[in-house]
Length: 250
Image (cartoon, rainbow, N blue to C red; front, side):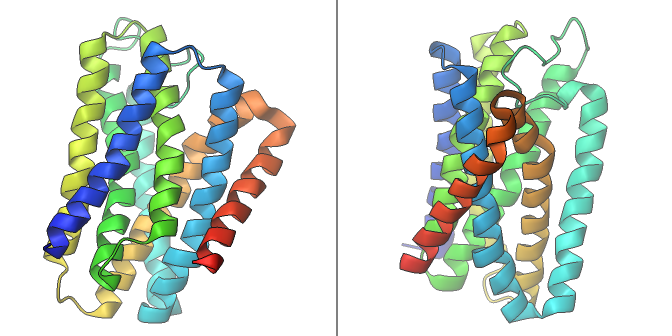
């Protein structure tokens, strides 16, 4: 199988986790505390994957200076775009407890929420594509981290969309489109960077990793803390340890 096609398929798997979570959030009444706990666990898993799979590997290939610059750039770009979308109604896009504004309350918020969800998913997909390109197969720890975090993200966001009065066609159209965009991002990332210098791939990996960490801090942790409160740190630590154990045992 061509590398770009395999990368696209793994990107679709990651995007499908968002769609699965959205389906659960739309059709089932999952207790908010459960959603928050899984969100905290997923945040820990992602942070572990960033530290031991992405940033570490980027530094080995591209050096500390280039990796640091790329990491900060990714975080800055994410925060800037996220701030712009937040002003248009997408700030609470992962909240399930009725915090999302309806279209009547904030005109254009539906589109902002959709773009915000896409902003959250693209860096993860690019990382998946690069992992396939670099090793010939997907990084299991990174894939597990993204899937584990995407399910509660989709669940929480879809539940919030439903409470804000958005229709099923809009909600599932958004998540289906994002799943396909994740597949395209992973495929394009591996296709366009095939044969690129290791240092270039390292910097791009660091940029994506910086964006992911900013997303975790800005959207996942606040949603988790809203319900799990003082247990958030413990659950996040357990997620981090689980991913670290998987990475070391693999």
